[in-house]
Length: 102
Image 1 (cartoon, rainbow, N blue to C red):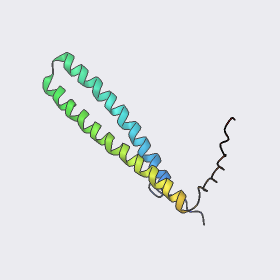
Image 2 (image 1 turned 90 degrees about the vertical axis):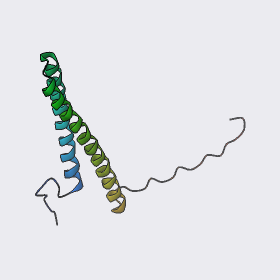
Image 3 (image 1 turned 180 degrees about the horizontal axis):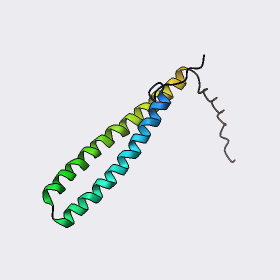
């Protein structure tokens, strides 16, 4: 039975993709905020600059959480593959005997 996901969260891959898109959006937002901070500094708008610095700090914290979430989703994907034997174990390579003079 093939189950077609209805939302991005119906499977780990969809969730991972969604979190990756969110991380990209955060990166763009942080860049825009940094530009706004520079503009506020040039204009001498100290209160606006302080507010934007708080926004930047909050975006940085959120980015750390998103990065952590991506790693956890990667781990879950790997574990699922292992449990479902999607990833076959690689055979061990034979150990070559060491001979002196070779």
